Amino acid sequence: MAMTLTENILARAAKRNEVVPGENIWIDVDVLMTHDVCGPGTIGIFKDKFGEDAKVWDKEKVVIIPDHYIYTADQKAHRNIDILREFVKEQDLPHYYDVGTDRYKGVCHIALAEEGHTRPGEILFGTDSHTCTAGAFGQFATGIGNTDAGFIMGTGKLWVKVPPTMRFVFDGELPPYLMAKDLILRIIGDIGVGGATYRAMEFAGDGVYSLNMEERMTLCNMVIEGGGKNGVIEPDQVTLDFVKSKTDKPFEVIRAQEGAQYYMEKVYKSKDLEPVVAKPHSPDNKANVSEVKGTNVDRAYIGSCTGGKITDFIAAAKILKGNQVKTQTFVMPATTEVARNLKIEKLDGKTLEQIFLDSGATIGPSSCGACLGGPLDTLGRLNGDEICISTTNRNFPGRMGSKSSAVYLASPYTVAASALTGKITDPRDFI
Image 1 (cartoon, rainbow, N blue to C red):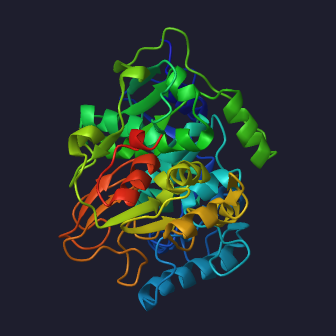
Image 2: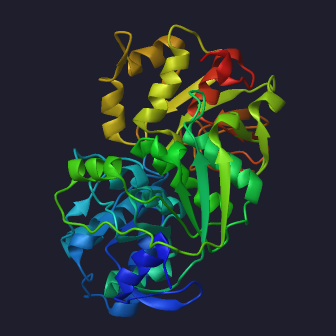
Image 3: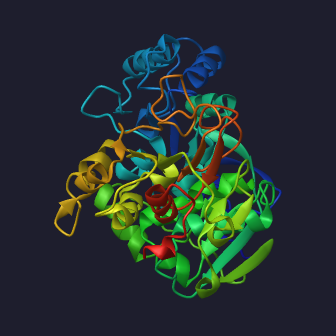
């Protein structure tokens, strides 16, 4: 039986010639990632089950990246970092990106790619649901709980059910006003937040392969919002060039086999698509921007693993350049590398950083910021009945702070355009 890309990657990890959807298999893990939210729980389970003096199965394959609750006075959140530091020292782990040091990175999903931990054909598990971001590199990447992570930490293996694959094809070149966020919000709106439950979501077509790696990461990042187990894009030369620029570790490119069977396939004509938002309070509450145009907003937020990459900021800067925002606008670079690039990348002779500052936006520190709400002093926390338009990935009640606030999800183009008017605005008015 011919296998899909996801099935073929899992077969390699299981040392099998073939796997089929629904089958339970043992697989070898290439990378385990955890952070400050789930790291202490994972460490606790690992020590409880394998012993206080146990060593991780392979210290080169454990990556720890604090990113969620790092800029806060909350001492309980700080204690999580202390636990990570103690464990890293005890285990002599080389891949720890500690806050307050030159190695600090920021949002784990973007940091993994920047540091060369995302490689085609491999298996990546992380204690964060948006670990699926790394599927953009042609690997099997998904989020897991602390118990599974603790088991991997001790054994390097996990028992996994093979998911069937849903394939989404974007036929034809994308119009200049569309971004990956528009594509994934449309898909989630079409299938619902449970439409891909325990299924792989594979992306293909000219529209997808015209995207750079950061935009492909946005596509795969939000498969979890559709219930997906993992998102994946078959590697091309763009993928290989990016990965080889980040790491010299060997990897094996794995592809779908000819004649592979898919659970379903949906084809979109790229030229027919419009900018999209997800209305409160669910990522599948889809509307074309033209349908909600004119809705008042109190805040615009550009950041997170979904919308805080340099590509996202270049897009926003194209619209904000030479204009003034009319609503409170936050710019939150996902990582310190992105923050540095804000000072380097230029449009018409001005750096992105200067464009944002001149427009009246506030630039925050590299982290998850307000995406997860966080402690009371998290930058950008929503209060009261505010309405925010955001490049983040979830808009459930309380996701960015107050349960009485409302969040619209949109592309950086749409968020930037809306920041200039104080109302939800179609980016085609500025592009």
